[in-house]
View 1 (cartoon, rainbow, N blue to C red):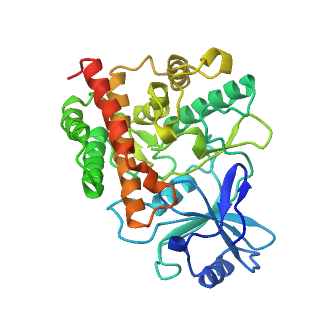
View 2: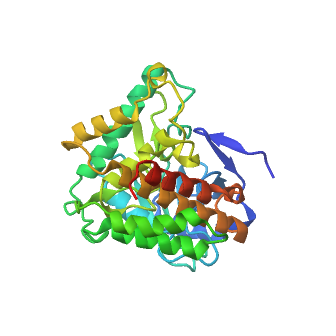
View 3: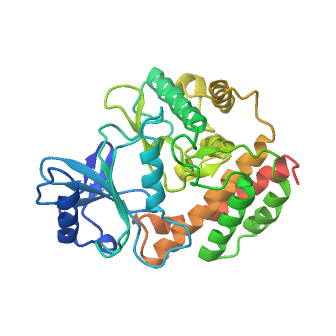
Length: 356
C-alpha cells in the first residue's frame, strides 16, 4: 500500500477494506454516463468525515469526487446521499457555491450502495476553526464570507429552486428532537444521564418560531473549500443533514465552538479573538442578523442547547459505527466519550442559565 497523500489539506489514502467497491463496475457505469470518460479508473479514499465514505476518482485526465452510503445496517433516514445530490443540484445557480453534480445512482446493484459523483473543486480545506496557517486579515475575510454564505443559504427561496418537498415546513425542532432522540437510542452503548435530561427538557422548551428555510445541518469551515489563493469560499460540501428547517439551528451549530472544545465544532472559546482577527460570538451573530435582516435573536440559549444535544447524538452514532467496523474513518472508535461530554456541556448550560 502506498503512503497517504494530502490533497488540498485533506489526506488521501488507499480505499479501506470496509469500503472497497467493484471498481470495474463503477468504471463501466461512469463510462456510459460521463462524456469523455476514458479510464482506467483510479479510486482512492478521503480520510476524515465520519458518515458517508468519500472517494477521489480519476481517469488520468480528470478528477471527480464520489460520495456513497456506508455498508452494513444503517439507521433510518441516515446517510442520505440522494438528498445531498438533490440540494446541491438545486443550489447550482444561487449565491451559495456548490460543486457541479455529475450523476446520482440509486441502484445498489452497481457498487453495493447508492452514490453520487460531483466535480472536484480546487482549493483548500481548513478544518481547524482557528485557521493557524493564515494571517489575521485572511481569517477575518474568510469568517466574514463564511457568515455571508450562511446568510445567503437561509435567504434562498426553497420553492423557487425546486425544494418545496425537501422537508416539512414548521415544527422543525419538535421533529429534529424526536429524530435525534431515536437515532441516539438506536446507537446507545452506555447510560448517559445528561442525554435523558435533554430529551425531556428540549421538547418542553421549544421557542414559538416556525420560519422555514434551507438548512445545511453541518455548516462549519471544515465543510467548505477555500479558494486556492484568495480568502473566500468556493464550495460548500457535506449536505447529508440538510433539510427544510429553522435557520437558527445552523447558526447555533456554528457558534458551539465559542463554548468549549467540541471536536468537529472546534474551539473558539479560549482564544484572543481580537489578536487573531476571528469574530466573537456577538460579532458573528451581529453580522448574520445584518445580512439576513433579522432584528435580533431571542431564546439564544435554547438553540445552543439543541445544537449540542444534536451533535452529542451524532457523536454516539459515529462511535457505534466504529464499534461495528463500518465507520468512514479509522478514528471513529475515539468517539467513546464524545456523546457524554457534549451532553453534559449542554445540560450544564441549562442549569447554569437556570433555564430549567
